[in-house]
Image 1 (cartoon, rainbow, N blue to C red):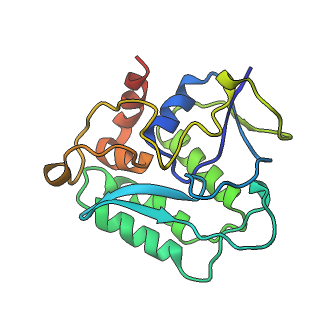
Image 2: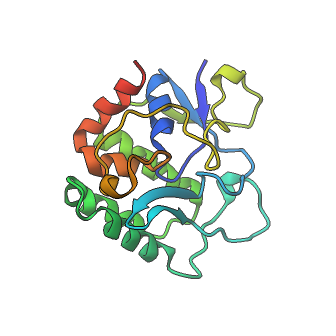
Length: 201
């Protein structure tokens, strides 16, 4: 049976580690949107510590995640990319990925789900993870061992005790957990895939 995940905005490291452990996985399309989750936010590490980047939601009356639209009333894309560049411009691999990341903060996707799916596809391709991903065709109850839709909380500690890796501000803050996959990608580059696989051992 396939493991089922929600679609996150450049989700946390343990989210991708759990995906990598799944032989086949589905992305939930028909769930109700849940506020204050990684569905529309991610954590990066800036000069002042952990920083949450939040995508504002257009209040159009829907609760279905697949119909949810980002609000562009203010330029959150510009703000997010500026924060990412400020946080990671001195990291070993930021310049390597900068031009590939930029379109996420230039193109305006109509639906949040589509935006998030593109971030997942980006990580899958850049790291050559070969994740076999499809989308659910309806919302259904799933065996708890296959249901990862609510396993990753922005308010809780990560699923795994992560092995430490060199972070941009580790001399200032020590090792910080609960960060987006981008933190690891900009620090470890192509070796990110090896790191994720080692978590599972």
